[in-house]
Amino acid sequence: MNHTIVSSQEMQSVLATLFTKYNFPQEQAKTLARIHTESTIDGIYSHGINRIPVFIDYVKKGLINIDTTASKITAMGSIERWDGNRASGVLNAIKCTNRAVDMAKTYGMGLVALRNTNHWMRGGTYAWQAAEKGCISILFTNTIPNMPAWGGKENKIGNNPLVIGIPRKNGHVVLDMALSQYSFGKMQSLALNDQDLPFDGGWDNDGNLSKDPKAIIDSGKALPVGYWKGSALSMILDMLATLLSAGNSTYKIGLEKDETALSQVFLCIDPSTFKDTEIQEKLLNEIIGFTHDSSPISKGDRTYYPGERTLKQRSKSIKEGMQVNTVIWKKIHELIA
Image (tube, rainbow, N blue to C red):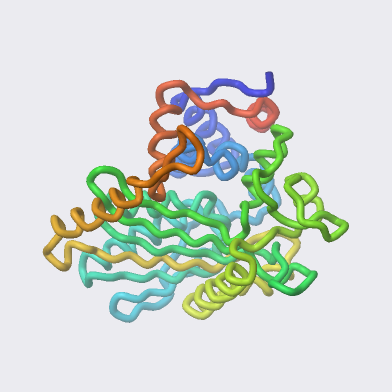
């Protein structure tokens, strides 16, 4: 058996102890433990528990500044530019999302462009955060170059995640998608369990499209979602994040040995500004209902709105615990020892 059942309470406690050991202040350690646990509860192991050893490695290398968080550089109305000070990407993203929400509550819309930050782990975390406060969110980040631009051989673009969240009474709508067919974190999770991808996810070292996550990780060449369309969207998001934050582009990030000093955008909108929230809820339910009323391709299957399966997985994990890879869980305990 290669899995260990871990409760959310145990995971948060263990991770808080770990982050405290590496000199994060107590409240920040608790926040980091909660966010990584919540991601794992929601089934995003790749950016939850499985990411912890890499995160600690970055801390050891001095790539993550534990003594500070993001700070505002300049502002003009509902648009602000912040510097992440190479602090924890999670703590920075929470702070910038909260600021964008506050501006949205004041102006109807708020945008924070953040530079010089670190990996934010699961981008969907901040869409759920904004939705809980009643705000629509559009969030994105650039990354190291880990995909070939369509038609090229070398990695020149990032899998730059795009996140969109919409608050809803009966379950928030949250889209969280990397612009690679599968995120490298997802491929690492499948590789740990010796599982293949259901569809081609990238190229192997011989230049062939492959479903083998280990072969794709080894080549470092992920497949853009939608082929040329995903390639173009990756470039556009990189341009926007870089221009708005005056930060590093995917090109500049790729000049470093490790993925750090990223650029991100946090845009929040307060839909209550229009004073017709009941109509908004009705329209959302109309779209979801129409999509749900669909004949499944496979018997017993069905369609879902973005975020619906996350809520289902969340409920299951809270009730039954999380199936954590034993190798990863052992590594985490070794880091504490």
